[in-house]
Image (cartoon, rainbow, N blue to C red; front, side, top):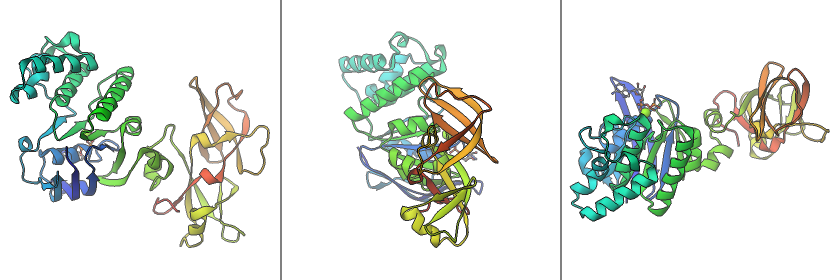
Length: 364
Ligand SMILES: Nc1ncnc2c1ncn2[C@@H]1O[C@H](COP(=O)(O)OP(=O)(O)OP(=O)(O)O)[C@@H](O)[C@H]1O
Ligand SMILES: [Mg+2]
């Protein structure tokens, strides 16, 4: 078991930064997920932890020891890569057993552990086959099984579920979480899937353009996003981000957006007064926009025309055109809505997020 830290770690390829000044500390036993869009530097970060890339600058520590010049084989980490490499000449069973055979574990123990992991991953029927005779998703599960049987200081997993269908992916998410709860080995898990990140992580490190945007527990990332990028990345359907202006002559802190005057209380309200310009962006999650019928009164509301209705069974997503903007609203199923009709939606300003319109940083 080990803590992992990155201190000011950067990596440039031919002078172009892929990872830029990352400071990150992962506690012993923690399940940390690095998430972000394609090309943001996730795999490069993981490869520096593994020892396959040397940082251009900064320090990588594992268990307190500086690792920059330690070769991968001496780091005692188990990895599953995006392009998982299995031994092509070995059967699935031999691939799974490989780490234990190197450690000269007793034959009976090996057989038992291989059978148990194969059953957990649903690959019992494949034990006698070679990697070339497997589908992508099957290979991925073998690679995962092989890593799990290594019992390393830490796991580094790069999109280990990317080739699985939705049902299998959900099941594997559950299994990995269960294994981690039972044996809390420090895990750094890379994905571009925010659902995977939200459901599995103790902490999420959200990257964009080689930089960390925010590191926080999933619920904090959702409720207190540091900036508009984080707010837009986490949550489905996406948060509505709409420009607004600070109303300077109002009696209380107020933002005007979509022709609606919205009072802003709390810290965000207090910060508005000292904002050097009037540009803000308001963030309204789709579930916070409720069709107003009958009128509740008191809460701000906007009126718009329904452009699209997406019934999902348990809920309905509605695209509402309000002036020059389209808002996504999450409505109850069978809400009796019709495309082309006009409705009002209301929201509680207390749950609204307010961002600096120039920098994108959250206010308050
Ligand atoms: N060996 C390399 N040589 C040159 N550029 C590289 C190399 N490896 C990665 N890059 C560049 O560094 C940036 C980060 O790449 P990286 O593989 O870390 O992204 P990622 O976040 O893992 O993306 P994905 O989600 O698509 O896997 C990209 O712009 C990529 O093109
Ligand atoms: Mg990658």
